[in-house]
Length: 245
Picture 1: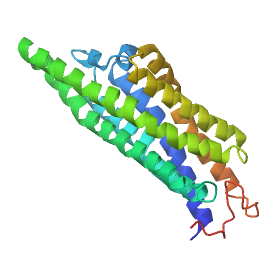
Picture 2: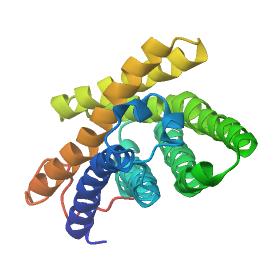
Picture 3: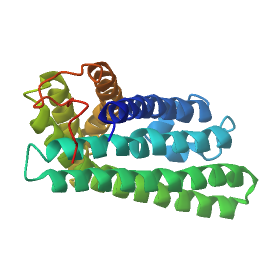
């Protein structure tokens, strides 16, 4: 295996993940005509004359790849690293893969349903609008309240906490970043489980920001350090001739 090439590829895809995650937030704002209220209540999209169905669809596709699917290479990289550090490596990686899959499913659902409801609502009758609104709110609650901010954040917290603890000696700043991201996810999940919206919002906002910074930081560090051929094998970035089995 060409480890040096693999590390560069993981680094580039991780940085791209962060860029797309940031792009997804911008596209939601643009798709809603920069009405920031939609971040707290997506139902504001219905009947909004400035809503752009195309941008909203693009935002969820960017979210699906940025916050989730493009983290898969990093997950594989860390799985190989964690195997040399902890007996819990498979459990930690399973949590990471479940987080990525569940989150991507939620984004994929909204990429189809958001544009459809936004287009249908203005041309529907009053009775149909009420039905559309109720269905829209239920759908958002299932994705936001169920899949994203209750289930996936718990799995994400386990993954990031496992990584943070494992790398904290070799990469202390990145380790702290991972641990803070894990606790932000826990706060979000616990807030939703206990019906504490302000607590959940605090955790979510930290997650949204650090969820962008984490892959960019990791990718940039890996891209820089992968050029160092002769490094200690105990470091996160391993020698290019070391088999990552």
